[in-house]
Image (cartoon, rainbow, N blue to C red):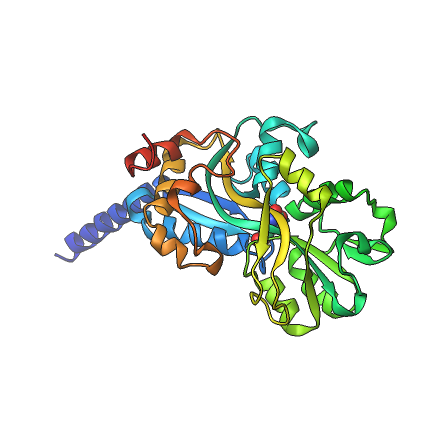
Length: 323
Ligand code: GLU
């Protein structure tokens, strides 16, 4: 009797371990590259993973988020096959796909679009005591031009070109990353910072509630020309009152945050991720205030220069968003 029980117990244990080995093999891991933890990309990745993980029992995909240097880093790391997905500015998605600008020697024709997310105005924040009232007045100041790999650093170089300003024109050009900028500007180590970012953003809230800093409009002829000549730029307004101490509208230009992947990622995985977000858009909108105005028809089209991943296309057809 005792002997039989042991055998029975052993058989049952073996069955259990076989069972869990099978489900571990079925499980797939995907990682999303985002940006600094006080930016909007990081919570965007978190919101996407949350919706994917919610239906894990149906598809076996486990989604994780990584804080990274930003757009350009994410695109290059997806290209290297070390990330499956990433958030990237629409201008850098365009250049990666077309092999232009920063991607001239490093094209990524296999980059694929999933959907676009929130608008990202090019945001210039200065210390009130710096006296800066427009972009041109950054000359002679200590300016954080952004960490290499970030979208804002790459876009800053374009904006500097439009205004005919070089790095040597600044008293100091620093490369603090997104999560460090608010502290640096409030500690008085820099006069100005730029961030291409959705609003409201934790990093800008942190600075505007800690010290006296002002959002500055970035406009004029050079910017009008950029917007006219490039499909991925738009004029943008940061509404007055979004941040403490900044009651007036800020006029600037901007890009869109987009969600990208590679043609090497399987159709089934891209389908699951696209469907998790677009089929649950009401839930997604509630996960960050920058998502408040997202619209499904715009998300599957606007700011996407690379072809849609076929898996995403399948999801949108099934959801009736595409013919
Ligand atoms: N647009 C920034 C970048 O491409 C990131 C903004 C964010 O983290 O929300 O690096």
